[in-house]
Each structure stands twice: as C-alpha cells, then as structure tokens.
Image (cartoon, rainbow, N blue to C red; front, side, top):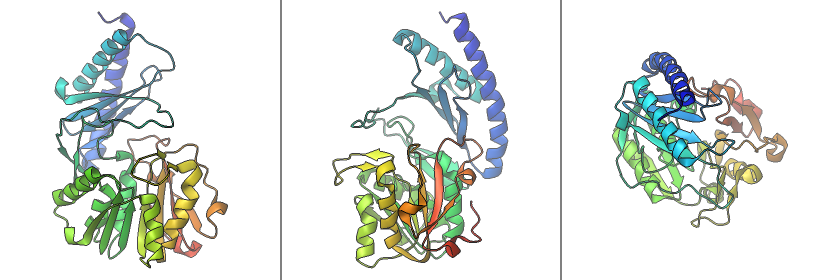
Length: 329
C-alpha cells in the first residue's frame, strides 16, 4: 500500500502536470508541435522529468541524493506514472518509464529494449520518428527546437555540415529551409539510416543529402584539407565519447577548442558555426579559438518548455562582422 506521503506526492505531481500541460498545450498548438517537456524536476522531492509525445509520454527518474529501497521505489514510480497518464489524459500503458543515472568515465548508456517501434511526432510543422522504448534518448532532443528553427530560417541556398548528426533533425530543418546541400556525419549506421527516414517522412529531397559514416571529430579537418567549404556547420557533440569506432576519445570540456578550430578550417567566407553543449564543465574562452568571433545565444536557444540549465549555444564566425545583425532564433 502507498504511504500517506506517497499519495501526497502523487497529488502534488498530478496537479503540477495538469497546470503545466494546460499551459503548454496552447503554446504547442501555436508552434505546430505535439511533443514537449511537461515537467523537469520542478519539485525537489520529485526527481522526475516527463516528456509528452502526442498521445504517449516518457517518464524519467533521476538519481536521488539518498538511498531508497528498491521495492518502495518501484511502487512510488508506478504511482507517479499513473498520475502522469491521468494528468495528460492518455492510456496508462502509453507512459514509458526510464531511469537516468550518472555514468562513470568509461560507461555508456546501453540499449534498453528491442521493440523497434518508431512513432511519428510533429515539431514546428515537420515530422520525426522517435523510439520511446529501446534507448534512453528517443531520437529527438526537444530542447534544441529554437536552434533548429534558426537553421531552417537561414539555410536557403547554403551548404550545411551537420556533425554528430544523430538522427538528423538539424539536417531535416536545413533541407526544409532550402539548403543547397546537406552532409550529416555520424559513426552509427543506425542513426544515419534513421536520419534518412526522417528526411523521407517529410518528403524532402534526398538528392541534396549525403550521410557519411565517419568520426565527426576528424571529419571537418579532413574536409578542410581537401578544400571543401560549408556555409553553416552544426556542432552539437556529446560531452564524452569513447566509442571503439573513433580514434582516441572525446572529452568535450578539454577538446572543444580543437573541434571548433577544425570546423573553422572548413567554413566558407561569411559562414557560421552553431556550437552547442550540455557540458556544464565546459568554459567558453574565446582566446582559445582566436581570432574567431563568438556570440552567445544560449538564452535565446532555450524553448518555452525547458529550463535554462539544459544547454548553452554560440554562433562562431571568422570575423565579428559576420555575426552582426543576425537574429536568433
């Protein structure tokens, strides 16, 4: 039986979700979205995040600062999932529950299931396939919605390089904005195939797209060496990666400046780098990438349904004049 405290927390959680979802649903209709974050650890005693995907949802449990017996945790979490379904007015089985934990240096998140089900959701008038069960992340980082809108707005006629492209959401937006050519780079064939399927889901021209299975950290430097140039480079790397498919490892707080300089070598005159990160330890020191010019767009890059702590973002160009007059997003 749930304790009185558990039932009280369920009521707090339910009421918060109802109020938040009612507000966000109106905003989402205006933004032509059916997916958004409803809750993100708003109440300290409820270390949860809840993302809505149309008539489905994913509930994430974050690590507590103290130990809780496993059986009690399962019962409590089941109660919170029940509250989420009731508040969002969706079926209880439509709420997928996952746990987020802090990983060690050599750890990677593993595949959770092999259901293979892809669900189509809508974001700012475009469609994306998400997998709500098989992986910790679903295939779409919703906190980058404003940055993707920026890419669509400025992409017309441009050559776009999307490094660490994951499932290709930035590539979709670039093609939707009329990019002349888009190259998406990732080490995973699974993600590259997923990116193509997202492009096809929107009826966008595959002839203008190239997917490259390569070490993204090295790709920009290799492109610069062969004389390839891009008007817009999207650099959204993981905080850490030690994939066996890449040379060495990537520790972004240590390696970010080298990555940016490699990208700068492949920039066309007047080109832009959109650099973003979730790495809280990363310190943006413009002197490390001088003489490149940097504009902090972090505040404008956080959408309505996310808190500022999600990520930071910068526009980077060869000259300060290249950043003048740029509106973000």
